[in-house]
Image (cartoon, rainbow, N blue to C red; front, side):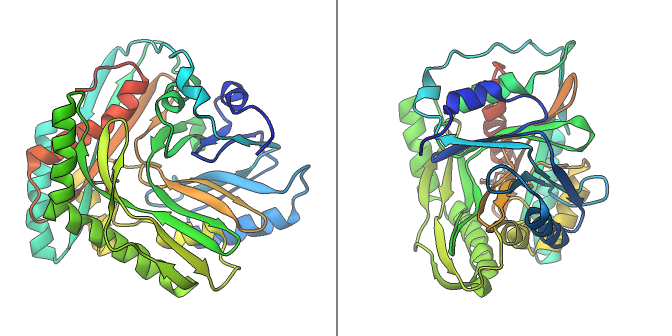
Length: 383
Ligand SMILES: C=C(O[C@H]1C=CC=C(C(=O)O)[C@@H]1O)C(=O)O
């Protein structure tokens, strides 16, 4: 792919823009020709399609944006048709050699809830799974971090891009002037012509700087019955949703080991051919969301249980971030390993799948390992 230098796209990114770096390409969208918000995701997908049909742009029209975990009037799905869209090639390997940007030390870091309360919530979730007949629920916690000067999502994004040569590294504007910034390993859905791909992730173990422990953790994950079951619940749901849309679906018989800089995962690449080319990448992402990777099974009882036990609003964490063009092609990542950045504060999120066998302390450690993606980008201790 020719086009602008991907490092230039990264350095041109400013709060309010949309940025997405993947292993294949880098995208920067600036300005807003049109903004579409809707709390109903399938209505949103239709309205975005109509907007892309009507709008006149220099290049092929495209919309970028976010879906929340749970759409409401206050947290709707939000897509923007940028005034200017630039695609470049992948930002790696060049990005690895970039100098790291310094981020001011925070004045306060507060876990929400307290770690002990998160472990109690895991225990309560295990009991509720049996009582309410759920197979899995995802429980999240947050870290509220405050600064005495404005936070610069540009610097956090820069360090995240430097650290991640795989996955989906993003910054997207949210309602109320906030910015969602993060680096997710997980592809909810991509569509190119009739070809669709989903790369669901579930099952985790922390990475370690000690190579022996790191390898042992990877082996433990590959051998873990609990993690394979947790993963199977997810792939089954993705396949069930995609099947009616596809003439062919390929699902590998077992998941592969996925490495992020801070966490090991189990991931499965599901590919398919669309029967109906009318289903855009955004329609398909909306149909899949929320998957059991970030919610649970069955969906509505799992969402209710997570909301009861977490006691905070997930906002745009555990939603989706991506783009769709006028042909219906596009790419949507699950918005995990991310933070919502306000003016002088940010909220960082991490969750984990709770199964009947889950151990509260292990689940707490898993969320700490997931926080490390953002903590590392901010130059903060990862414990
Ligand atoms: C919900 C998160 O991760 C999901 C994705 C991969 C592995 C997961 C797990 O093992 O629990 C989670 O399903 C998160 O990072 O906040």
